[in-house]
Length: 615
Ligand code: CA
Image 1 (tube, protein in one colour):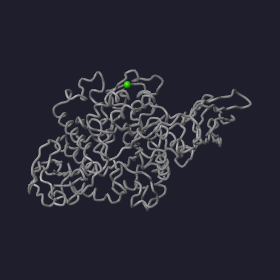
Image 2 (cartoon, rainbow, N blue to C red):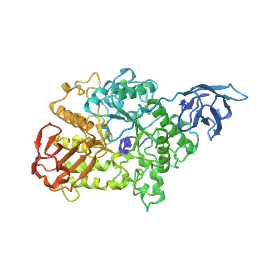
Image 3 (tube, rainbow, N blue to C red):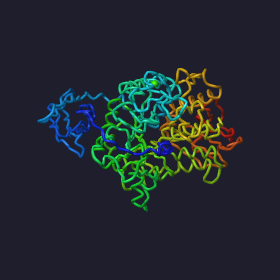
Image 4 (cartoon, rainbow, N blue to C red):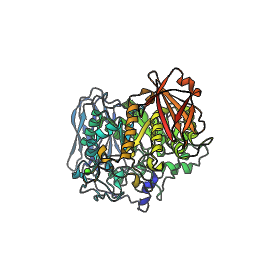
């Protein structure tokens, strides 16, 4: 998430009002499973003066070990231990007192599903397709406006309002995503954001256990994951540890003062990630970065509070187990309490060894993004247990290859240099690489709507190391600059029944859009079947005269990639690369299928990245 999204709302006044709950309003997580790795569960119970009640439960294998009362009498936190012998079933949690009616919540322990074929993990064998549910396709008009929610207006003419896209719309177009060659889908958050303004983006959560009704239901989300899996598509869930929406029900009636970071006056984060790692940091600066609020409408969780920790941890485990998710994208990673995030990651990996996680780190240097990854060579203080991050440095370097001037450290030299710094990571191949996303200008606009540069960038993205991610619409040349970022969150043409064109179909696309789509499709499907581009070794050569050559290879194949950043044809002498090409006689251009002999010189067209399979 990027701060500029919310500048529009900076004038809003922070006002935490007190709400009156019903007798028993919430028990969360509302159900759980038998056979989980961690036997401990902490139930948040919310109801009017619930702390005045005596709590009992009686179920074989389930023990209520502690009833925690906190500042607000409307909350109880129940520490429960579920033994390995506990059987799936339902039992009553009783709340009684001398005065007043006894209350009861029927708690269910479900049989844990076998996760072997559902939680598969997202790795460098995948290509991620990122989309925003509100802006992709409207598969159910009946949920466009949900009465009782704070934002009811639907206005497709304004980038700030809801547009009606939903989970059913995505389900209806899974075949399209599959056809393109993607193997994983990352949705921006789909849980409830019952905010009065700009609620479509999903990063201001108001109910952690409920899919936003305008996107569908919890059951439909589970169906979406199942159907995606049936199509060979994995699912990544976007989760926000750092903050929630100010309209969240528990923010209206805080369990305790230190549930969120409170300041005498509204205090915003400085967005200065340097303070997290700076050895010379002023402690006041670090506190402001970490404990300041992202924006006035998003209270900052106090992640040092163990009740908050349990709440977030269990919520994410609940979603993964419930829906069978393959990976998690962690929003605003650098703003979190790093020690808490390290313990969270350890816990979730213990529960789901195959689950993949990557953190959003919109930072400025290789060192500062590597700082957040596990087992790196620089952060001696803490092991974050975080395998990968969003690799902004690769994106910026590819931009420089395409738009910058070739020089000692710029142009193709920049990408070469960034990759040469990979020694800093335990495993850089777990970073998510990308050219754009929902917070950034669209890639086609970045390259000045130059289709050659567009193809060249995609070629680098899909052939260098990492887990490549593309943003919906990139494949059909959607364009715009992210100021404001609603401009890069336009509706996918054809996702709405009333749309005049349908770009999900080749017949609805222009010739140039089909050229782009087919290029990415060809490349994505080639990558899908070429382990050398997924898990193969990378060898790169020092760039010369604006040309950068690298190889990906394994026992099956060797792929040679030649990036010509010059706007003129280059005749590349091949004898420099004998270490890799010795023994091969011909090369196949993987895009057009042409095969030719490897001669002393290779002709590389202007502003082109050639991908050659050596034979
Ligand atoms: Ca809809």
